[in-house]
Length: 112
Image (cartoon, rainbow, N blue to C red; front, top):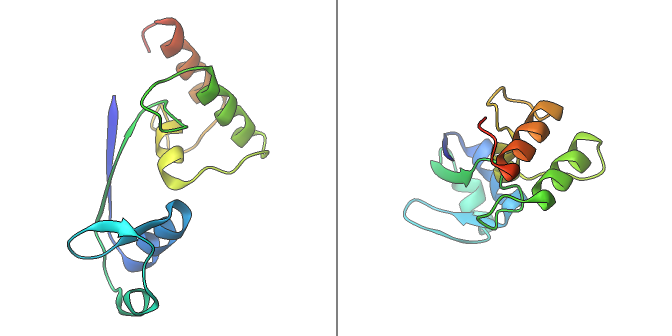
C-alpha cells in the first residue's frame, strides 16, 4: 500500500527539505534550496509517496525495515519524514510496537 501525503506551509516544507536533502521550488524537485529560495518561501506544496512498511525506501519490505523501526522506537535511530510515513503502518500518527508487528506480518504474508 502506498501512502501519499501533501504538505502545505513553508516551514514544514523547509524542514522536510533539510531532512531529506530535496530541493523544492514551484515547478520541480531537485537538490538543495538556495538561501534566496528559503527566504522567499511562504507556501510550498509537496507530494510524498511511500510504500507502507518500507522504511529504508528501497521498494521492498524486509527484516531490515523492522530493525530500522525498532531502533527508532528505542531512540537509537532517527527517521526522516518519509521514513516516518512508511513506519506508521496502522496510520495512528505514531510509531510503536504495533507498527513493527504489522510489518513483520507483511513480511511473512499474513493479512494486516
